[in-house]
Image (tube, rainbow, N blue to C red):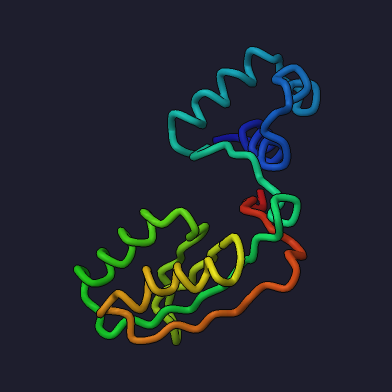
Length: 150
């Protein structure tokens, strides 16, 4: 990975729909060179996914909840089972296995609070390995992003 790759990635993190011609103009490469580099970055797994970021308010007022989860016990099997369950739940937008007071931090998006309550029943109350969880409801998404500072 060189300076050109880093410049391409920085731009693509903000706008993945930019044309390779525009990219080339910004970083000083030809469109073909940009295409080759982007293809390699995808193949190498540096670019993992390209998605559309939706506005939950425009879609009817979705709520975002930050959840701290504490498991009853540790162990690779319990942790791996919890991770697998989070991967299957569409409402779980982000899942972090962390150090500190909690075992996991989750970012969950739900259609409304009633829907969130149903998610808690499915993910937490129905899981004997969850000791407790703490929910913090987001009042405003001030900054949302997954960009890595390059």
